[in-house]
Amino acid sequence: MFTVPAIIDNKNVYFEASFPVQSPVTGSHLHDSTSASVADALTAVESAQKAFHRWKKTKPTARRDIFLKAAKIVEKRGEELGKYMMDETAASEFWGSGFNVPLAVDMLKDVAGRIPSIQGSVPIPGAEGKSAMVWKEPYGVILGIAPWNAPYILGFRAIVFAIAAGNTVILKSSETAPRSFWAIGDCFREAGLPDGVLNVIAHKPSDAPSITKTLIEDPRVKKINFTGSTQVGKVIAELAGRNLKPVLLELGGKAPAIVWEDADLPSAAQACAMGAYLYAGQICMSTERIIVHKNIAEAFEREFVAAAKGGWSDVQVLISEAGVKKNKLLIKDAVSKGASILHGEMETIEDTNTKMKPIGVKGVREGMDLYKTESFGPTVSFIVVDTEEEALRIANDTEYGLSAAIFTEDLRRGLRFAKEIESGAVHINGMSVHDESGLPHGGVKQSGYGRFGSMGMDEWVRTKTVTYKD
Image 1: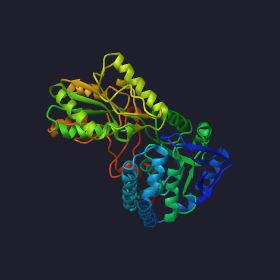
Image 2 (image 1 turned 180 degrees about the horizontal axis):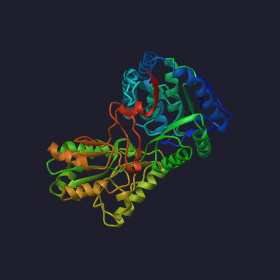
Image 3 (image 1 turned 30 degrees about the horizontal axis):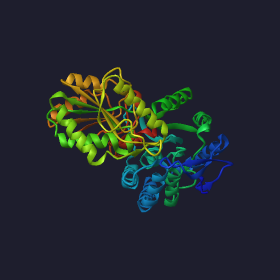
Image 4 (image 1 turned 120 degrees about the vertical axis):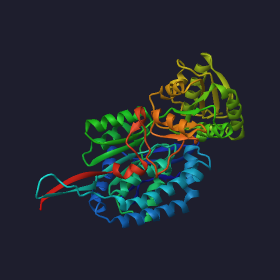
């Protein structure tokens, strides 16, 4: 049986312990992964700290060339990487090699081009006979923690901006997809990234609290980024706060899509169906609530059902049985309180406990668990409104604020909505699932703070003010 290694100092490393990785589709044993202990994690920190003193002095052009070479390697190995992702996370071929891998390649190319843009400034101080400079310097060792649901987009995102800015990184893999995360380190190793600049480790789920705590508390680790659930994000933030360390958090979502009476209904329906059901709704930006104007509610519902049946009605595989149970309980609660099924079947029994068909629920209102709770599955709610004020109130009536969508042919109205929606991103006439490295990405409220994307370079440098006598 194959065992996924860790990568430390650019070498494949096997620790004393290991854990099994299972297929979400069949439940069968895919492979094992070597499992880091606290001591092994500290070895990765030591490696990254040693590498930092060399890496921070490399020229931007040298870093750029490594990133461009890595992009070519990821592209060349796209089918292989996609296979790892499909096996470990039940991703479709489209979501794996057709979406995740190409976006990772684009990210590497984009960040490569941004590396030479890091620059300080020369402000003029108030005192006569004095001058000043403001330098931008990397932090040091960074801890990146990324989830399983988009391992190449989110895994590369957790490391590339930090490495590009001159930091070194420990990438802590999801235990669900260790081979996918190992491949990230392997591609950079093949591209010539120096030893220790990127170390990749995985561990048993039971060891997560102790290893995460140890890494955050280690004084050599200077900053953390975490993408995942709000519940775990709060734990990460608390640990970081106790140690006075900055952290970037991209957490859960309950994305609204407002469909107004002047919207292009077929186009809006396609975008809402894809936004709700892509990768079984297991995306933090997935459309969870469709807020539709009453004058076109019935017409839009017909369009949505047609769009869903046209490409989003097949059985989908979730990462675990727990996700299926959660979604079915949310639907059952809503129906028991007066909601009804618009699309799909609630009681369908599939051949494995990780599968369910996409569901659309109409008549969702306050007081139903589905109204507030992030489903993180192929379930979407329909809520009918009459006024802009009501649409905005419902859109903002959530603890989350990561992404939103608006469908209207009146750009002024769309911008008016966008201005008032409490969200890190609002997409007018586009689905809520949208992330690219050329744009800032992050949330507000319980969806986190800090930004990946185009502002990501500044996230990974800190200023140093230098003054001197003329």
